[in-house]
Image 1 (cartoon, one colour):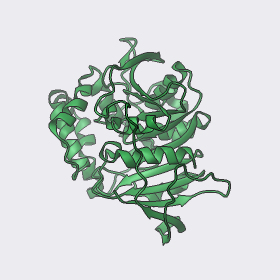
Image 2 (cartoon, one colour):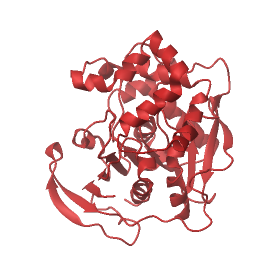
Image 3 (cartoon, rainbow, N blue to C red):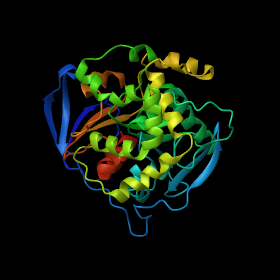
Length: 353
């Protein structure tokens, strides 16, 4: 693994955790201007003997949180500083199966919840709208923290999980110790979603347009596993995952609300449907592209085949202590699972910015 890092910090920053010192080199990156960059192989984060096996979380825990009964994995000491890891679509909590024990070995209490529409997370009421809009998903994170009486946590995520982590960090910064976000600033709004993109960019969003149709709804309902595997392959073209790895995560897509949540999310982005009134005030704040002030490390794999913004386009949205890390070696969209060492190190380093 080779890692390139762009840093933006103030003079009061703390030193990185761990014994290794990364090499610095000066580079110029477009709109970001002159900045310090680091290029080195980070010292591995090694789990000690007796930690939870990386391929299994063991029995899941459950908690009633807001509108949901949330299923989640917990790894590490109960009194450790809390890290909450949020998965994306169409993946599940096993994206962090190797990250979690690395963090637990460093003393962190790691919580990995299934999002609404995944795994054994279920709505408490049949009458609740199966809403997949971003503000609802982010509110679930706050409800989860409240239910477990967690005042503050380090948040990490990719894909939908990164968006939720970004939103929580922007709207509830007092609840966030630090942030690690794959693909950076992913907060959007319906007005922006109505603007057409260049044809090549639109092509990358083919599945969003597919989900806008009744045919897409029927197709995803019928072929969700094959659909998910195709997304995995396109989003991470150099990741050679095996059937067992995929099947373990694909089982989470059998949640009875999964298709409804997925379609709501993508149709909402296109402005085809409206969100619920209780989230409107949050969406209005998000429509202004609020800055994120908490200490943040954003990351990108060098082989991410999914649509993603360029780091120089979003760097200004992070106004606190900040770094961008490019992870080389054929790393795609599901960065925590493809390079757990790099992601775990980013969590630890963000917590010590």
